[in-house]
Amino acid sequence: MARAVKRPNFSPKLPSLPRLPDPNVPDVFEEMTLLEHMEELRDRIVKTAIGIGLTFIVGLFLAIPLLKLIKREANVPQGFDILSPTEPLTLYVKVAFYIAVAIAMPLIVWQFIGFLAPGLTGKEKRILFSSLPFVALLFFVGAGYAFFFAIPRALWFLSNLFPDLIDWSPQGNEIISFYLTLMVGIGLAFELPVVMFLLAKLNIVSPKRMRQYRKYAAVAILVVSAIITPTTDPFNMALVAGPLLALYEIGILVSFFLTRSKTSASAAP
Image 1: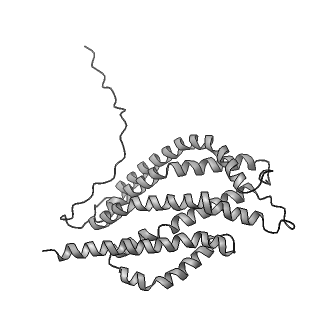
Image 2 (image 1 turned 180 degrees about the horizontal axis):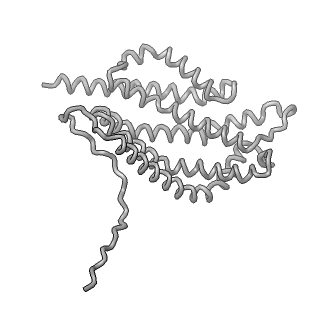
Image 3 (image 1 turned 180 degrees about the vertical axis):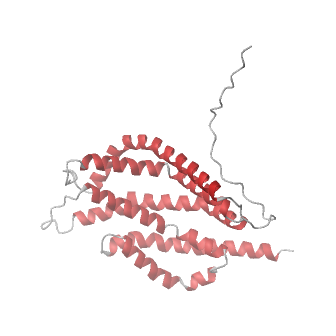
């Protein structure tokens, strides 16, 4: 009598992060061997590569419309300048890859945090998991602000600077690098409230000290804005410094309410 063949199970398994630890459990981290770490790293790299590969197909369809949008914002109606015959294809593939990474970013962060989580203590996991949504939100808000607002105005200023002396025909790779640098830089700068939240959460800097350091923070923000901003005019510099100054004040308010609720909870009988 023939044996029944066992049917393999191809049902997809959704990735999951470790559960939020119980505050009453001792603050320890999970111990793993080197081989287990390597296997965990391999699995998460494979999942990330598959995710980027799938979103790369989407990026191939979105690359041309995005390049047309960037061409219009960069004020180059005649098209980007190129230096080699293969540069158009290279530029197209590069933009498609950047789009794929942007779409797959939640998966990348998910796998990265999932790999780090076993090596963190319970307190570190609680802080990390509670701040993770705000980290992602603020970064995308900052990158979107750079793409739709700050960069087009900076390119308009640069393209109209000395029009009688300079023929504005930038290279495609330089414009894409310009976009990428500013989007990442401003996106990371928008993480300021999260950094202040973590400093208050860990009792490193109190909201009172943050208020006292406001003028020094303003100078530091102006310096960072001058580094991030590609132009030297005050208008484009203010496009970066203005939101960061507002985010610093938001960070003070968030830290204040966090510290007050924490103090009230500890003082309760």
